Each structure stands twice: as structure tokens, then as C-alpha cells.
Image (tube, rainbow, N blue to C red; front, side, top):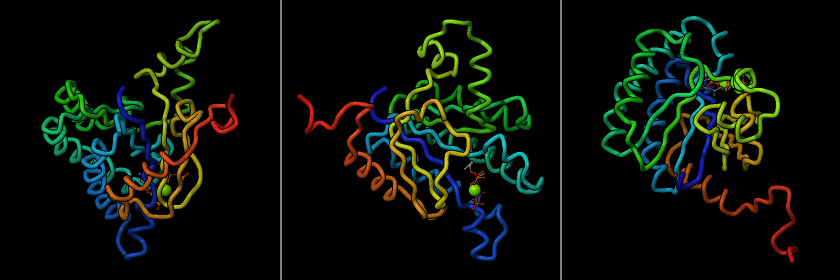
Length: 226
Ligand code: IPE
Ligand code: IPE
Ligand code: MG
């Protein structure tokens, strides 16, 4: 993969809406608009893979009205964005469980993945009904004793590419069961900005901050080497 892998926990839609006296679903709708802008801006910032946390497996526990609104939004988003991704040479795929998604959404996922399979400028991954712990448990179940790290990464699907930069909007400083294996050495960036207030400029700032950090992977600072 060329470019860096940026993963984003898109949090704060509900609070953004509440602060404006709007229903939570209105915050999710605004959030979808931001996804569009961020996806458009990302390839120009040297992002080769962008993984967006859209719905966690624990989010099924939210009120049915909100869950239903989200599923509808995901389907509309995928249908509308497929063509834009094709035009922008972006490959789109979905990670997470498929079997619990409503049938029309599952079809939209399959359609988006098939239509964008040749995209080579960036790989956009959307995490839907995703739980890192569940992904680890099912990968482990498929492996035998003596499996290596590479075997594990393969079993996790997609080769489980390491995350270079993890951004979480909305002010919370936690991973909420997102990409636990892949974030082993990720740079973490938490911003108080709610997701609907995020944009391509904020992503550019985050990527600049990432490039200012020194990654050591357990080694010693560059200045101290030799
Ligand atoms: C993130 O925003 C979107 C999803 C989890 C689907 P939230 O809905 O969690 O918004 P807050 O955290 O309640 O503000
Ligand atoms: C994480 O946000 C999931 C997504 C952004 C899709 P949550 O709002 O569900 O996480 P917690 O409950 O604050 O940890
Ligand atoms: Mg939240």
C-alpha cells in the first residue's frame, strides 16, 4: 500500500445535534456529509487507506429509532458514493459482520465493493457492525497452534494493515473496540471537535501533526542512535 493508513472514530454526532435542539439522527445525517468531504480530501494528503468507524457492534444497543435511521443513512450513503468513488479511483470496502445488517444494506455493500474493486488511488474502508474483539476471536478460531503474527494478520482479513494515525473526534479518549490489533503502534490524536464540525482541513492538520511525531517502535530516539 502506498501512503499512510489513517483510521477515524467519527464520534460526537449525537452531542452536536443535541446542542442544536435537533434529533440525534440529524447529527448522523450531517456526519455523512462530512464523510464525503473527508474522503475527497484524503488522497491528496498522502492517505493510502482510510478506515472509518461508522457503527460498532455495541451500537446495536441504541434505541431502535436511532439504529434504524443509521442503517437507512448507510444504505443511502453507499448508493450515492459508489459512483463518486469510481470516478475518483477509490476502492471502497466494508469491514465487520455482514449477517446482521438489513438485507437492502447488505446488497448496497456488495454493490459498492464490486463497482469500486479496481480503485487504486485510495482504499476506503467503512467499519459497520464492527468489534475488534469479535474480529480477533474469530481470527483466532480459524488459526491453529503455532500461528505467526503474519498468519494472524491474514486471518483478520484485508491483511489487517497497521494503522499509522488514529483520530477520534468528539473529545473522548478511548478506542471503543476499534482496530485493537492494527493500532499496536498507531499515533493517537484526540480532538474535542464533534464529527459534524470536522472537515478536510482538520484532516490535513491531523496528518501534519502525525508527520511531526517521531515513531520509535520500541527503539531509541533518532538523535540518540549510533
Ligand atoms: C458517532 O456519534 C456515530 C455513531 C456511533 C454511530 P455518536 O452517535 O456516538 O455521538 P455522541 O457520542 O452521542 O455525541
Ligand atoms: C464509537 O463511538 C463507535 C463509533 C464512532 C461508530 P461510541 O459513541 O459508540 O463509543 P463510546 O460509547 O463513547 O465508547
Ligand atoms: Mg459517541
